[in-house]
Structure formats: C-alpha cells, structure tokens
Image (cartoon, rainbow, N blue to C red; front, side):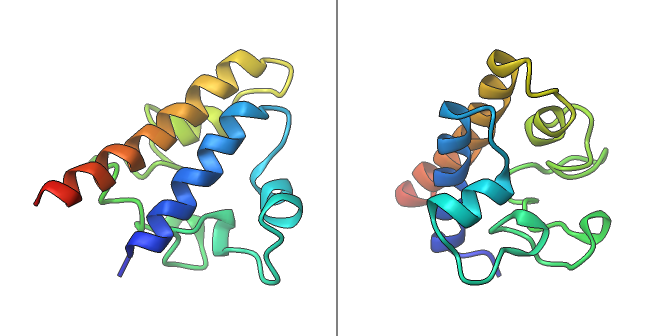
Amino acid sequence: MIGRDELNNFKKMWTWLSAYPAHDREYYMKNVVKLSKAWVNSCPLSNESKEKDCNGCKILWDSDKGTLCTDPRAPIYKWENTERHYPDNRSVYASHAAVLAMRYLRDQRTV
C-alpha cells in the first residue's frame, strides 16, 4: 500500500527534479536524499521490481494506456524521453508529476 511518506517522497523528488532538469532520479537518490538503498525502479511509489508490472502510481494516474512511466501522455514518460538539452521541457514535465502528488495529498486532507 502506498502511504503518505511515499507520496511525500515522490512529490519532493519531482519538485527537486523540476528545479534541476539536468539531473536524473538516480542522482537525486544518491546525492540529494542520500538513500542507503535505492528505491525500486528509482521511484518511491514502485510496487514491483519490473517497471512494466508496476502500478504504484495508479492513485495518481489512472489510465487504460499505462502508468506514469509507460503512458505516452504521462509527465514522467515525457520527462524520461526528453533529452537533457531541453531543460525547460524537463522542468515542466517534472513539475506536472509533482503537482499530481500535491493534488492527491491535498484531496486526502479534505476527506
């Protein structure tokens, strides 16, 4: 089950990556939060060892076309497939991913 801590970690990671578009998730885990053990699939929401089987982000992105990592319309998919020499686009996609978590967390407070 995905909890509040995992969602906050997801939000923090994508907020940071939106500010530093030249870096990737591995850099964030190793040098920013200094995790002793990396998140599976480089994502705090991951619930499977294989990315194609993971659906931990379903609470944020419920699509019949895939997950945040596999749906071509999803911000993380777009971020992963955007070259680092397009930092503005990477920042936008990363911030969209962070906003998904922010909205979900906000909505959970009002329930």
